[in-house]
Length: 343
Image (tube, rainbow, N blue to C red):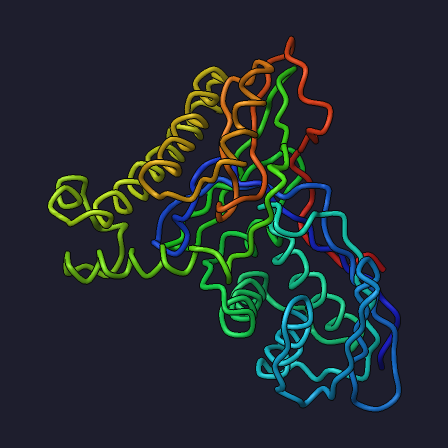
């Protein structure tokens, strides 16, 4: 029996560990309060009517249709198709989508959208709840196969497994998710929009993923998790720098977990700076707009600041001490609950 229901998918901020998820590496994200809400109401027949309320745009298609679309419609159509393929019996539904995560900000509005729509559709159809890891993989397929962005599981796991006051240490080889207390005292984490949107499918994101695969092929390994810095030095440019970023980023995740356990926020700030330098110089995903946003945060006293998300625009994350005032347009972010059905 179909019913009216709403679901919420939070965005996420990744503290440390960028572009490591598709390399079997480590990351330390946390869910945030901003996200996407999907309200599902029953419709007769077997059609999906989707409304992006914030954009005043609509879509309509048969549940069994596998026709492609662009933009936000690709996420909805992909979620419907992948749920059907997973054996979920969907029913005619109107899905109204609203959100508070700016698109292209690097705070994972896309994963929030996928997760919210999938949860709402399943709940509206009174389907059996899906294992969260299985649902994360399903939403990742939406991103990969329907949108064309070859992302890993970072965003989906961060959205689905988020916990209040906790970051998540994720090992993408074992898919083990371990809560890490994010106790900042009087310190604050803030994001600052660079003013430049990014889209994973249309940026250099897929190219970076191909470069990592090329490095693995040259080294004769399955994943960059198995590489060493010595091996990286023998690769041609830019593959050597791509591997170096992944390996040093994994190490920074472990160092950040240790810094949080010791309440060493000065060290955490330094790690943010180091991560940004690596993303800028070794992975080459920064832009002039991003660099300007980093400088604005540092000029206000941030202990560390870095680009977050896939790069090529989006937001910058900064760690501010108690006596520092952020720019007026900065937004404080705190770890919140993971994705959930609201009613």
